[in-house]
Length: 148
Image 1 (cartoon, rainbow, N blue to C red):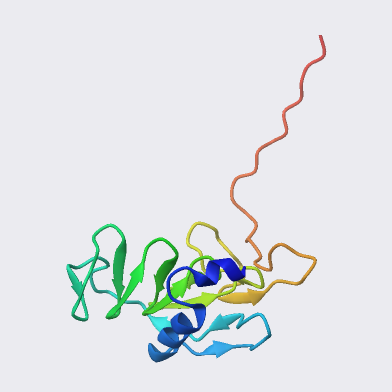
Image 2: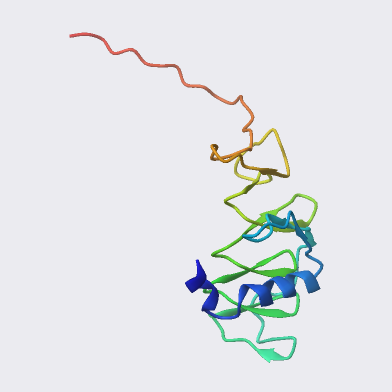
C-alpha cells in the first residue's frame, strides 16, 4: 500500500484538497477515514484546455472544481479529488457525492441495483456487503428435466 502513495502527489495532499473543497473526514482511524462529508457534484467540463490557469494534458488529466487530477490514479467525486486506489465515490440522488473507503463502507445509492436501504452503511468484518437489495421482480420457474 505504501508504494502506491509515492506515485504522483501524496494521499495527504489529496485529502487536504478534499477538505478545501468542503469534504471533511468522518470516523478517523489509523488506516484513514472511512468516508468524507458529501460535496456538491461538479458540473463543469471534466477536460477543458486549462483548469484554474493550469494547462491540462489531454487524455491524461482532468479538472474537478478548479483542481487538476491525473486519470491514472485519481478521480473527481462531487467537487473533491480522491485517490482511486484507496477510495471510491458514491453518487447520491440529491446532487451530492461522497468519497469513501470501499473496504469498510458500501454505497447503496447505485442506480443499477434497487436497494431497500439507501445511503451508505458500514460493512461488518465477516460480510461482503451491508446493502439490502429489494426483493421482487420476475422469478423464473425451475425447469424439470424429463427422464429418458
